[in-house]
Length: 410
Image 1 (cartoon, one colour):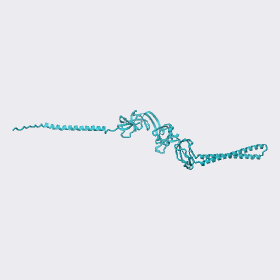
Image 2: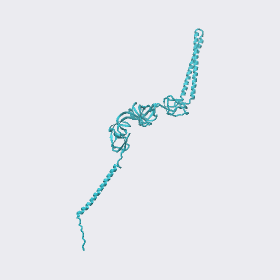
Image 3: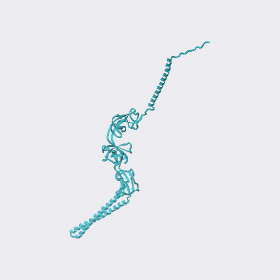
Image 4: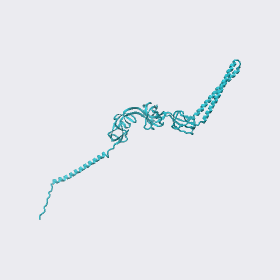
């Protein structure tokens, strides 16, 4: 039998075996490092994508105004609300008491000067007027009779003077006729005085009758009527007026009075142009003129000393359409400049700082300002026409460097 052959395996050299074992772990580490780097790159890319998309800061909405040429005025405004008033306003009441029998007009009616507004029951007063008129007629008749008798006595005395000159009449008779003449003359004067007295009594009775009627002292509008037909108006004690029952306004004498700060008193003067506004006509402004500046400071409230000013409307029709008592404001125009760069006053922060919207972000600038009022401010330096300035900083996010979404104000 033959013997099976055997294959012998030669062992590797010791150095080659060690090198092979060293290469394998190093290659594994490189692959792991590459995987780590790849994962890190993916994470960084994802984070960047999130920051640029989901986590990206959203633009802040801001309201802006465009810098443009316009009109800027320096003004003085009232410190508290003013009031629409009427220079001629009469709170009327009759001078005597009684029952109301005539009330021809109601609140809101326009009345002419001298027109009857109210009448009180006056049958007694009218009867007194009639009685006085009869007394006048009787006194007139008695005066006429007495004066005719005086003329007759004077004529008779003259005739007997001529007869005495002819030696026909005696001196004693002549003296008696002279006495009759003088007595009849005195009776004529007394009767005339009685007639004058009767006429005075008639005027008095007519004046008392007139007290029962209330007539308009001027043309105007009845603002209030506080009595009705049939009601009694009770007279007050002497020297105390009867409470007013009618309120009459002259709408051609409407004006506005308002307080300004004492520090502005030297800057305003009669004749300056004003801009008037009233609460009942929101959004409207009316031109007018300053007609009075009080010559003293009101110091009832020492922490808020003011000077009262008065202004009238240029358009009488506007004045006549306003209700006295309405709240109003007066803006006195001290100086006016046209065609200058202007921005809303609310856009200028302390120190002349403004925020300008440039390519979707905000940039802070310092500007030099000129005239200003509560509405607009003149810009002398720091801005150019057409640039957009932020008009309100109502959020902490509205600051220099912020990304913004602008909304231009009309």
